[in-house]
Amino acid sequence: MKTKKPLLILVAVALLGASAYGVYQLGLSRGMNNASTGPAAAPASDKKVLYWHDPMVPGQKFDQPGKSPFMDMQLVPVYADEASDEGGVSISPRVQQNLGVRTAEVTTGTLSPAIEAVGAVAYNERDVVLVQARANGFVEKLHVRAPLDPVRKGQPLAELYVPDWVAAQEEFLTVKRMGAAAPEALLDGARQRMRLAGMSEEQMRQIDASGTVRARMTITAPVGGVIAELGAREGMTVMTGATLFRINGLGTIWINAEVSESVAAQVRPGALVEARAPALPGIVFKGRVSAILPEVDAATRTLKARVELANPRGQLVPGMFATVNFTPAKGGKEILLVPSEAVIQTGQRSVVMVAQGEGKFVPVNVEVGIESNGQTEIRKGLEAGQKVVVSGQFLIDSEASLRGTATRMSEASPSENAKAKGAAYRSTGKVEAIGKDDITLSHEPIPALQWGAMTMGFKLPAGGLPRNVVVGDTVAFEFIMPGEGEYQITTITPTADAVKGARP
Image 1 (spheres, helix red, strand yellow):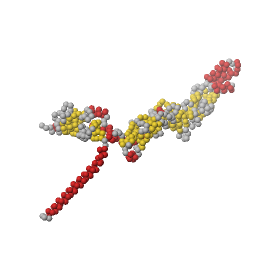
Image 2 (tube, helix red, strand yellow):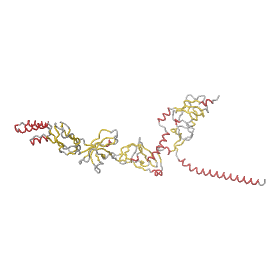
Image 3 (cartoon, helix red, strand yellow):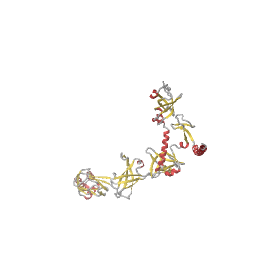
Image 4 (tube, one colour):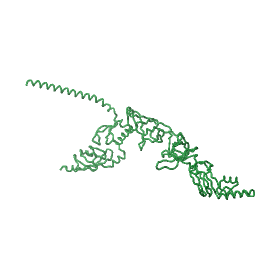
């Protein structure tokens, strides 16, 4: 027993020492934690609090922190850097460098749109000549036998035998042989009968010069070009007015260029054009827009610009494809210009990201105009000298859109508020407290309002609270929202479970 007593004393001393050391270490660690926590909390205190609010009722602002009068929760502070630049985004210089963010200045200048269209070569319908039979006769010989054969002006086309011309020529020659005895009026009448028979002035001069009857006449080409239509064959009988040949000139041709409906207003009659054909590489044909046809193709939504080009060598032929470049008018008024890559097209609107300095960016809706050579006209939304993002703007816009969505979710539009005010919502809950004018309920989630389960206060019904509703009951209730942050119960009744467990 004597040996055990000193041993117990030693164990007790060791335990006391260990306890003292533990208390010392605990105090030391708390001191270090307090020392480290103090400076770290300083930056939070440096932030300027604009106001406090209840996230469930964001429109109501409070000057002091505390418990929300609407919900069973503490008010949340809103700092200056969170409320400023609503819908914008702040990015540090390092992140900007990683994203490859580049900016460009909004400038003023003139913009000449480059308009290009494709089209098909066609005959110039204003350069068409019809050769018809001027009297009944017979085709005895053809010098041109196939359509699209080229012809020169004055080239023989066909030889006709016209019996009606024989009688008119003999009458004229008989009067002419009478000499001075024949009155001048008689000679003029004979010439007129030859004209009525269908003879041309040139043919009549030949009869007058030769003095012999010529029943066979040679028809020549009045213009140069190609035989677009051949209506005569050797041996056939022709009637007065029958079309023997249709000749299309090739000195000038048309290109019917398909111009997009969106840029058709910029193409004017008389505008200079340059045309190139794949079949004739290296050759540039120059001309002008002769007309804008008043018809829109329903399938392609294009208008036809009729372009007239000189074709002295006849190299362009109908059916060829050609590319037409329309030369815009020089000059014009000063307009705002930004690089086209800076404009984000969403389908419903056009957006550019404006750099405000110090790493802040704000999306701005703009109205765009014409676009050419990598530049886009800005009609509304920007001013000269502003900086817009031309690289990495999609990532910035996505971040700004997310923040803007959060802001819009927290602030309902007037139409949504009006809808909420007129709607009635139902739920079940437990009565926590009953006051003079209100009742506190712990209700279940309300999906229609995207509310979770919570404890909150409601105004009592207009007719007062039913007597069978007491604290601790489970009730089914219906409420409306007559104003912002106001919740008015319209009906409230105990549930079946509450009735079963009702007190005697």
